[in-house]
Image (cartoon, rainbow, N blue to C red; front, side):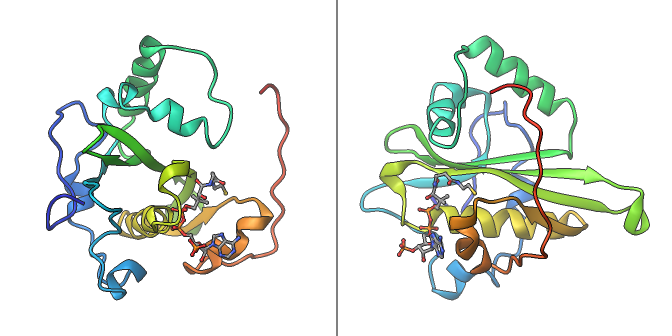
Length: 192
Ligand SMILES: CC(C)(COP(=O)(O)OP(=O)(O)OC[C@H]1O[C@@H](n2cnc3c(N)ncnc32)[C@H](O)[C@@H]1OP(=O)(O)O)[C@@H](O)C(=O)NCCC(=O)NCCS
């Protein structure tokens, strides 16, 4: 991350106020225990921050295409979706890591917040769409984003946070306190 605090924002067109990230206490996270403020590949200036409107040009869709099918659409559709998400504040926190030396988004993850009537009218967090650019894997960016959004969901008052994952990655999530409670993840797919 560029700053001591780890976060900064130069674009006013951000999905959410980056103060939400700045005030998180990350001291109990594993990357902090290892004495790392943030994993940095040689020469790269990595910055974690909320998604920005301008991230279309910085490759957010190319990055997401390494996770799943993104589809064939342009800036207009991206910006309309950005606006739709931003119009519902407090529900969707999309964080990216930018390699500022290349003006390129190299990792992202999303925290969705559900408002429930159960558990004393609680919030529930869901971590989604975690992906790290192939060139930046094994640098703990994925771990960092997972820990960051886990702390964020707790700070937002969620009674729990969940992560659906593919079986080969179960061990990755278990390293960060996630447990398999034996629930099945079922789906019905209407289209690609
Ligand atoms: C999964 C992903 C996000 C991990 O990101 P990353 O930044 O490379 O991961 P990190 O560097 O933080 O952590 C890697 C470490 O996690 C651990 N790990 C990874 N997979 C693991 C597994 N299946 N079981 C146990 N530990 C695992 C290893 O200790 C690994 O260390 P290594 O780099 O020394 O091999 C990244 O590989 C990715 O984007 N994959 C494609 C998209 C995807 O599958 N997303 C998740 C869907 S559930």
